[in-house]
Amino acid sequence: MDTLLSERSLSKLRWRCRRGLLENDLLIERFFNTYAHTLTEAQGQGMNTLMELADNDLLDLLLSRKEPGPELDLPEVREVLGMLKPVSHPSFPPIPRTPEESI
Image 1 (tube, rainbow, N blue to C red):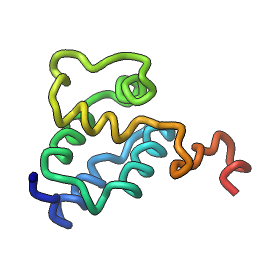
Image 2: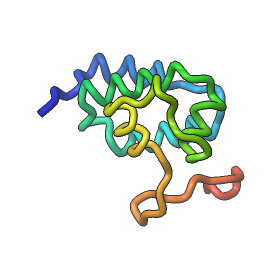
Image 3: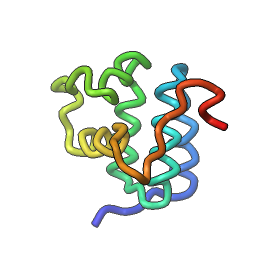
Image 4: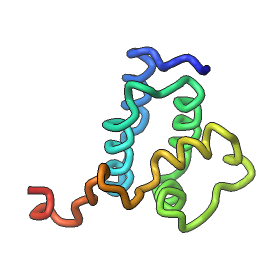
């Protein structure tokens, strides 16, 4: 079993994951709300690798508009992508599309 991220590493990862596109931020926020206390070091590395992408490239991966290239074809990156992608599931509320929907 992989080692869990320390609180300090988790804090650094959260800071690193701040993005310029609201859509990315919403998906990443939901990811941390769901998985923050169970993230492993390998998953943290996968997330760091994804954060090196440009915002639009990351969003394309998250929305399955494209598949990861060979440089991203790593087990930890694929695992984190699966955790990040929006799914139709009752425990995942829909992402608000307008400010009125978030009320």
